[in-house]
Length: 170
Image (cartoon, rainbow, N blue to C red; front, top):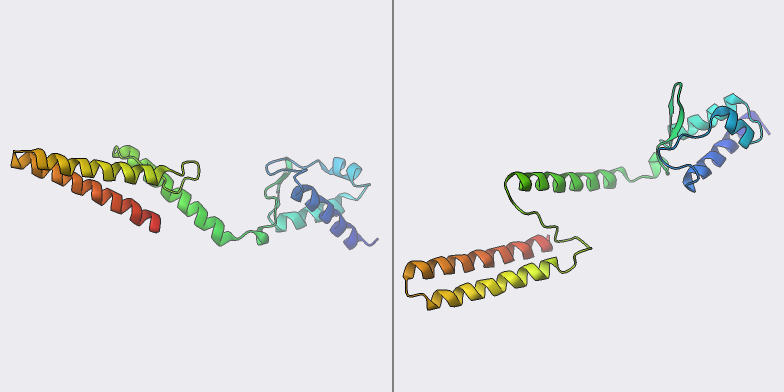
């Protein structure tokens, strides 16, 4: 087996260990001596060349004096960077809204939370029922100012319901 073929073969074996989860992200890979024993005695140069191929793919990081560490289960070229960045942006926006809500005493509700599938329905039905109640209460008031206040509350509940539906539609 030629020297080039040997390090490419070793690279494939090491990549397989990462891809199958035998070596996990964040884990230090075995030392050069341990890799030499595990893979049947390749030279340190062959091992380093195979590791460098994994570094080039973004799957491994080498720290001088510490060793090599798994950084990704798949090569960076196989990752849809735009999708990952978009997902990260969405998470950061949600976190930012959450922080702003905490600072201004607002409540942030995730209408798309799959663990709470009834959130939108419960909110819209409760707001609709409350708006109906406020309208009926307004009709019972003799004091015009109190009736107007109840109608304004009903209108606000209707607007919140409309805002929820608009947010869900996108």
